Each structure stands twice: as C-alpha cells, then as structure tokens.
Length: 293
Ligand code: ACO
Image (tube, rainbow, N blue to C red):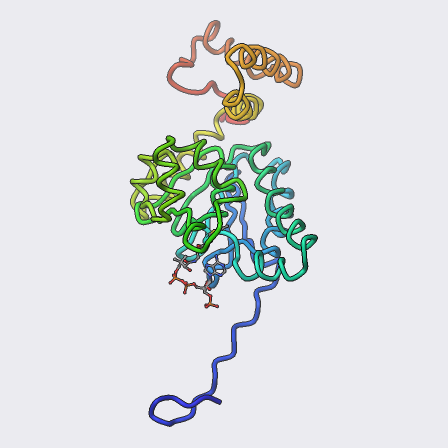
C-alpha cells in the first residue's frame, strides 16, 4: 500500500505481467502477403532477447512458405520499434557477463541478416517511433514506407553510446555524409517527410493511407517473377560495395545462376512481348501462369 498527498492509501499498481515470448511477434498471411508485427506495444516494441528469438522463428517459418510472396514488417500500437530494449537487451545481458552480451547481440543481428538476404521481397511499414536498433531491420527490408507522423532517431548519443548494431552503417548507406553525421551526433528526430527526403524510407504518406499504399506495392511485387526479384534485390545490395568491373562480372554470373535455377519466366516474358504481342515490358510485368484467369 502507498499513501498519496491527501494521506489516503491506495493499492500500488503491480507491474503488468511480462508478455509471453511467443506473443512478442504477431503475424498473419493474407492474399500472399505476410504481415509481421512487433508486438510489445506496452514497451514501444523495443527489441528484447525474447522478441529477437521469436522474430527469428517467425520469419524462418514464413520464408519458404508457398502461400507467402512478400513480407511486411510493422509495429503494433504507436511504435514501429523503439530500438533495443535498454533493460532486457542491455542491462540484463550485461549482468550475465560478456557471454550474455554476445549471445544477445548474435540473436538480434542474426534475424536482421536473414532479412537482408531474405528469399521474398520485404517492406518496412514504419507506423511510428523508430530508434537506434530498429535501423538494422529498417535497412534489412528491401523497401520502406512510413507515416508522416513517424519519428526516426539515432538516439544512442542521447544516452551515451555510439550507434552500434549496424546503425552507423545503415545511416551512411542510406543518407549522405553530412546528414548521417548530423543525425548520429545530434540525436534529434526526423519526421516521415524528413526521413523520406534524407533517404531513410522510399516514401512518407499520411498515417491513414500507409497500409493501403504498402498493400498496393505488395500487389505489384506479387506480379513479378519471384526468381528475378530475389536475384535483383541481392544484386542491388551486393553491387553497392563492388568496383564497376566486379559488379559487371557479378551480374553476369548472378543472371546465369538465376537462369540455371529457373529461366522459364524470362522465356515466357519474351514470348508474350515478341511473339504474342500481349504486353509491353516497359509498362508492366508479363502475365505469369499463376496470375492467369
Ligand atoms: N527499452 C526499454 N524500454 C522501453 C524502450 C526501450 N528502448 N522504449 C520504451 N520503453 C518502455 C518504457 O520504459 C515504458 O515502460 P514502463 O511503462 O514499464 O515504464 C514503456 O516502454 C512506454 O514508454 P514511454 O517512454 O512511457 O512511452 P512514450 O510514448 O511516452 O515515449 C519513446 C516513446 C519516445 C519511444 C520513449 O519510450 C523512448 O525514448 N524510448 C527509448 C528510445 C531509444 O532511445 N531507444 C534506444 C535506441 S539506441 C539502441 O537501440 C541501441
């Protein structure tokens, strides 16, 4: 029992029970789109070790399912993800010593890496707060869309560390040098339109239009040849760190590897344009057998 200023006693509110690990991520698959949600709204979807382990399970389950063609990562409530959980990821892991710290890091970095090279196209749908450790998954997703009122920040500097866990790398990969430096050193937030202007996301749209916009992009992606999509997204990531000559060579080999895996798609695409004259590749995707009426 506690006393308030009027001297009356009141029952102390006991802290809410900790969310079960399996409930820290929610997902549903609808029309070949997997909507995956950070699901710790009461902690602004901060990434705890429980959540990181559960996210690995969820994205692993979805990656090779035939009924999934694209994955969207978003957050329940008013946060996308408030970065790493300062209590459970930092303080509790540190209390376990170096082994605890490294284990927690590996569990987080592992699913971000899996997402960077994911079999299916991925989209970050940033519905609200997006801080620090959330930049790993933000960058891991192939595309990113946000609500105008979302807030992005490298807040590490505000509590005394550097932007680790890949966050500094994400900033320099997505932003120009001056903007990345300012963003990391000042610890200020960017709203959605500012984040889009500085390259953190593809587009910022009003919050009430965000899901519809992402849904429309997913439906376009679902029309594309999945073999070409995987080869394309890997190519864009890989060539960014290659010389021109290396990139040229890599792209020849990557296309040949994709062809040897399955080239029926490109043959069909050429046939529909050159022989059937039923579509124009400059204006949209060919009709794939799965799309046929
Ligand atoms: N780690 C642990 N707990 C968190 C985190 C976090 N990153 N973010 C929010 N929470 C918890 C709060 O402690 C609070 O818990 P409680 O209800 O048990 O006290 C609950 O989530 C709600 O948070 P509020 O601060 O009350 O929510 P509000 O909507 O007012 O503010 C905001 C949201 C701005 C996101 C604020 O919570 C915040 O600044 N969080 C930290 C953001 C951050 O700097 N993250 C770390 C980035 S650096 C890195 O990831 C390496």
